[in-house]
Amino acid sequence: MRANPRSGDLDFLLRDASSLEGLDALLLLRPSGTAVAEWMRPQIRKEVLCVMSATMLASVDALLEELQGRQAAEVLVEADNRRFVVLRTHDGNLLVALASHKVPKRRLVSTARDLVTRLARAPPPEEAAPAVLPAD
Image (tube, rainbow, N blue to C red; front, side):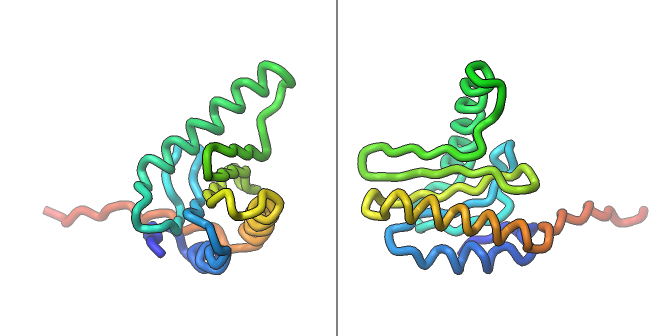
């Protein structure tokens, strides 16, 4: 588990959910793509997954806003041998789950939705303390 120092108590939720066999990554992101907390297999580049997840959701949102006047609450992408789900959390952050196609779609989405519900009950992430410069 690699956790951002600001993750507070969120890492235990991700670690618990990461027990799903076939899961490659779980991330809690700000809409900008900045990680609040994350769990992922070592071979996955966090920077790519974070930025592209936020970009993908922003692209889908732009399409949906044009077509139906609202943003997506949930996006599921299936490509080759991977499933990728992005859900909005109660506070506007994004939960990203990436798994092998061997994980049933229903199970991946259900796990992600359950995690979003649990995140709504978790304490908010701690903000980074401002840097304190030494007095001259």
